[in-house]
Image (cartoon, rainbow, N blue to C red; front, top):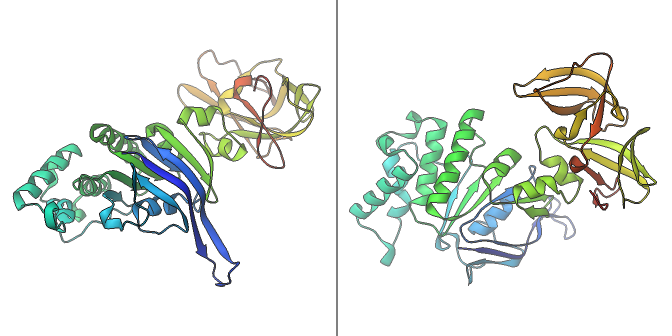
Length: 367
């Protein structure tokens, strides 16, 4: 089922309670989430992503704007009647109930035509437990489960209602790195098998990039960019998006364009046809550096970190915004790196130019 957000806005009163003291948590959010898609709301803490999720679920009422599930306007429909499954960061399991009774708990509250018999509830619980691969844990209590198993129980409890929309609010934040990787793969598998339209809130760009059909990058309540994960990474709309996506993050330099040439400090590093002259911010992805003895970008060598198939060259440059520059170089045929300096050529496809005042992207004919 598609989800349509029309000019969705949420404003909270400020601490002083004065009319002009307000916090705009979500501002004019308009987007149509396709039926059966997994969409990630991505951004730093306080960007409005969880507020957006709570608006969709019905836990919060919008200040203005409309929410549609399919063609049905659900803006004024109570949360319990929207048909959503919601999974929280802290699992929210009942410690005194075993896994089976945690899963069927939402079904026990159904009334009227939706009410199920005990046999029907048990069958649904078993079927959902098989889907999330916890069918052998049904008699355990939450305290007897690992963090990943508890998260699967929370997902099963959300799915057992057969919701129209599945909402996941930072569901992996409490897991260690290896378990987080395994669980996000499981979430993607479950979403593909069920075909439920899913909205996934995260501040972790690796999670968003790896499992989402679309990502929505947010900052201070405003949508910065929406698109396919790889497209947003390769073609960021502004410097914020470029810096938020990517591990290691994009390297940023103070630069200038003169006569169709890009300068980083005094180094003439690249032709940038079509870019107007002036001061610029330059972003270079870590994989955008090529080690060359005659490379035009001259940096002070810090150290070399071996990472297996790749090598991270850590260096510095007076025009860099950060104290260190990280360049990812293939370990195959790695040239000898020694001395006080290291020289790079830049891959044009991995260089992005931004306005130093607004952060907006500056495009040339080839960038």
